[in-house]
Length: 227
Image 1 (tube, rainbow, N blue to C red):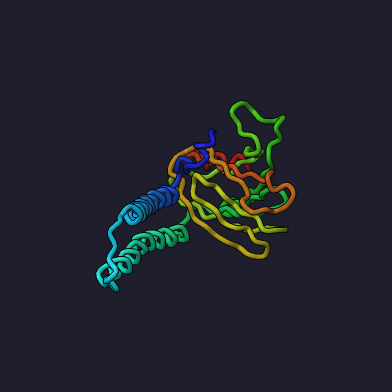
Image 2 (tube, rainbow, N blue to C red):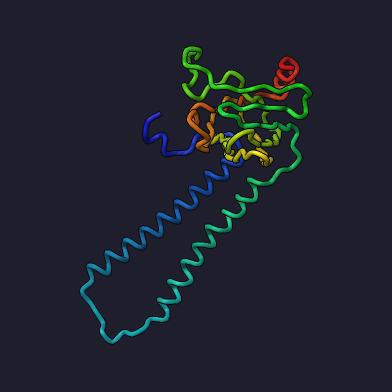
């Protein structure tokens, strides 16, 4: 990926990240308008030679520059709060996965399937196949069904970690002694990668996350064969 490509969002794979991308574009449009008006006003004031020593107040202008910024903040705050509650909302999940952060690997437990649990370590460079990503591929991927709500329970066994998948819009801290939860729905199949986003020690860069989204029938077959 080029340096310019790193400045944009990854292709969305869930409704949550679609909403986040839309809000980002919404805020960027408002920011562009505010900056444009501000730069134009500064340029106009600098280039204007007309002055008026008798002007001591301008109530209309003062009202405008008080009400207008407040209105702009409302246009940003309302969709922001709506999105904040949407990311925390969990409906009726069909699959529950518990993720436990360790130094430096993840352990996954599928609560709905007895004895379905495994550790996920980074795949060494020497074992990578063609097309796989260095420092992102793991030996055991998480597998979830498409278009089905998944509840993710996050905790840690030693230090604070952070379970993050940018393309799905997930970022949640794994804290020892505390159980955090988050819900998501993957709306397209594929393999999506993430990394621990908390500086958790010397090997912080070697604790990646890989999640594979497949159809429901293939997911059931995978769950039966993995036990």
